[in-house]
Amino acid sequence: MTEYRPMTLADLAGFLIREPNDEVRWKLVWEFFEEYRWEPPDRQPSLVADEPPLTDDERWDALLAALGCGRPRETTSF
Image 1 (cartoon, rainbow, N blue to C red):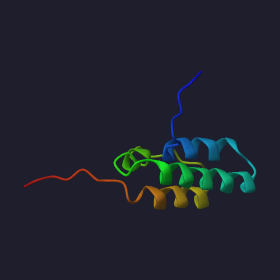
Image 2 (tube, rainbow, N blue to C red):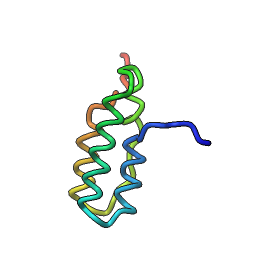
Image 3 (cartoon, rainbow, N blue to C red):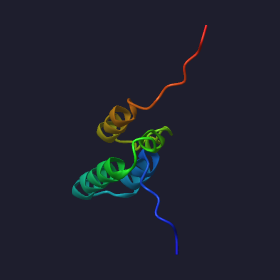
Image 4 (cartoon, rainbow, N blue to C red):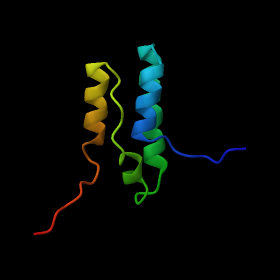
């Protein structure tokens, strides 16, 4: 039995790449939002930390980029 692991943004991209049906793709996006919402706030950033692979569809790539915008960026101290 495998342990539950919430979907990451990179996981979502992989699912979108493999799924040709847009209706199912939107359900996958909804599932990502639900899993993100139920994660503790201190764990939520880890779900968007890794850059997702390109899906070869500009619309889905733009959505994934927008979802990943809020991920923490490394800062450089001067």
